[in-house]
Every structure is written in structure tokens, then in C-alpha cells.
Image (cartoon, rainbow, N blue to C red; front, side, top):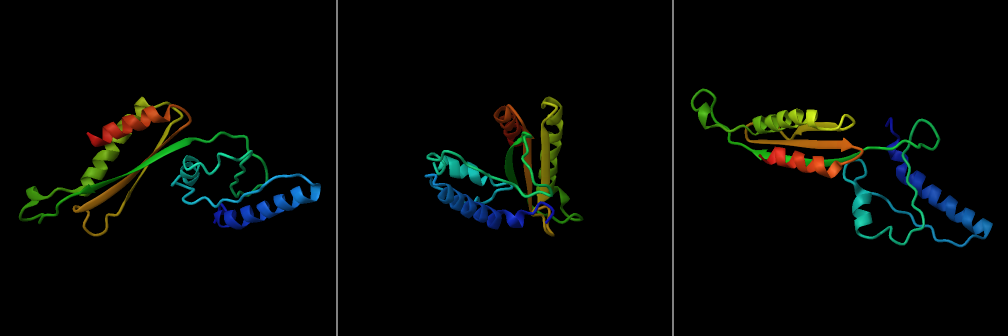
Length: 168
């Protein structure tokens, strides 16, 4: 709970009510709308909401993130693009027929090796993150990797390069 994300919903709802009450008390006309944003940390909830036109008629939109301090941050944040890659393999008996096996986990690891080699061709302020998941007991049969790239500019060009690298 270090980030205090459990307070997002209730804190935002309370701020919405407080803003509505302040507008009424000051005699200022205006509409206040509250949105919950699903999949905020890595699912880009606001992106899908904006694409659907939910913010088109707004004069202002306010969002916040809980922290250990109360203040306004003027820091810029990195853009992020993330993709999930799933690999399917074929298990085989390591003693009798190892040559018939195709390891999904090996495919995930080779993908990460390719992404790591791509780092030297990225701007110095770019970051690459990845994680292995969904392996369970039989790593040879299924594997998945999550790959994310964060950088402040030229995101689309590098995302395309990443996809080309990983589909090769």
C-alpha cells in the first residue's frame, strides 16, 4: 500500500463532491463529472476512455495519484507501451526424445535477449522492462512474456522496432 492506490476511488469521489459544493456556494455555473478509470497502472484506462470521446466536452480534467506528500508535481512522466507475447511449445522426455521438444520458456528467454540487444539502439532516457509469467510446472509447453518500453519521445518508432524484433 505504499502508493496509497486504495484511496483513489474514495478520494476522487470526495473531491468531486467538494468541487460541486464549492461551485454552488460561490454561485459559479458548471457541471462536475466523476469518472472511475479502470486498468490504470498498466491497462491505459484513460486512453480508451478518451478514444471513446468521454472527455470531448470537458473544459478541464483533473487526475491525481496518492503519495506520501501533498503537493503539485511539475515533473514529466514517461510514455509507456506494453505488449504480451505468448509462446506454445511441446514437452518431450529429456532422457528418451529431447530432440522432439520445443520449449516455450526458451522462446520467452530468446525474446528477452533480442530486446536487450535493442537497448544500445534506443535513446539514453528510454527504459525496457519485461517479466516472465504463466509458466507453471511445464515450462516447455507454455510461456509468456510481458515487454514494456517507456520513453518520453519517439515512442511509436521504437515500439515498431520492438515488434519487428520480436516477430522475427
